[in-house]
Image 1 (cartoon, rainbow, N blue to C red):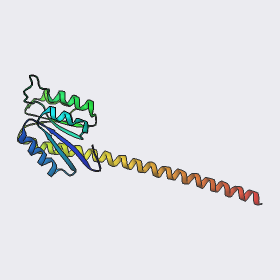
Image 2: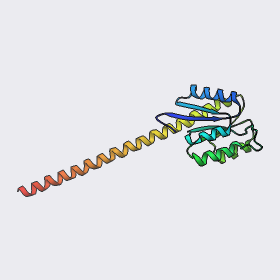
Image 3: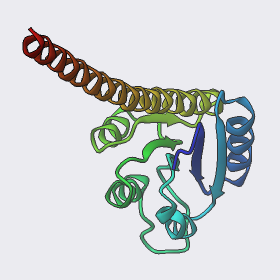
Image 4: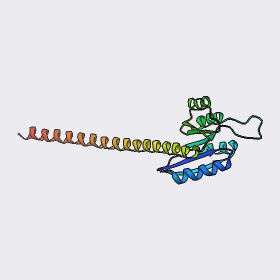
Length: 175
């Protein structure tokens, strides 16, 4: 979870080369402090889902020894159930508009096709998510500060009214 401009990003893909490159690019090129954890199996990732990452970059298809490995869409549904505030970016070798639209309809923040622009595009999307979260955090802090200022002003106005009422009382009873 976010802690003072710190973001946790989980990258889940069975392509170890892609995992390494995404980890490096996100950690080095983002404008924010990001800790990137990588997982090359869904099972390993799901064991860490209770850490409630801010962002998950998730492969759509996983090669697995299981007979029917879960799709990225099925894993994303688990993420949304356990950590509804986590943004999910689906990354896939499938350049299929129907799959992309389905994942976005189901709650993905974005869909990235694994091509020669996949890594910089994913980094840009992750950075945009962190920027939006940072703005939300600042707005919440400003709202808290504004409520405090308004509270102080109300107390000051009430004290001023009480002082004026007391001064009026003294003036009426002195004459």
